[in-house]
Image (cartoon, rainbow, N blue to C red):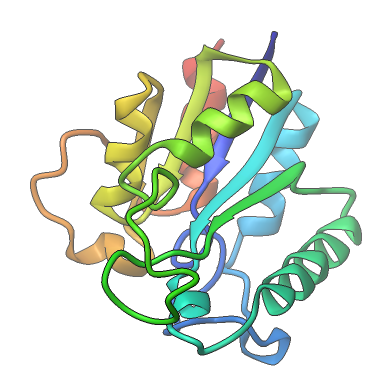
Length: 182
């Protein structure tokens, strides 16, 4: 069974800006591409799990999310890195378009996106990690029993009393994981 690191997107991989969906607004946080490459080089599947309520709210379409994720992988490929899969939740429980205004199991802090990826990739949960910048990210990982890290980038700089490992950035988190596992 495979091992994986689940990554939140906004605030963990890229600079937090409200509802990033345009390529021209996307900006990798320093060291993020290299961190993803290190995970790839150490046989971790890299899986992005992201809430995208901007779809429900009508700010952008699912196609915009696909385009941005393709752009991310194109940029990562320039250094020999990749995200193995992107899973996103387009829903919101109370706001937006009726089609997406539902109480789902995929919107973090629920764990539906993780559960789907575990099945798709036949992952060993004991060898998986989740890194995110919000308590909802951490809760989603803890609900399925994987190890979690809160990064202090994005919203992570304002989170207090979150019961998990805390690191300053994604690159520091990857260092922690790779040292932890050896």
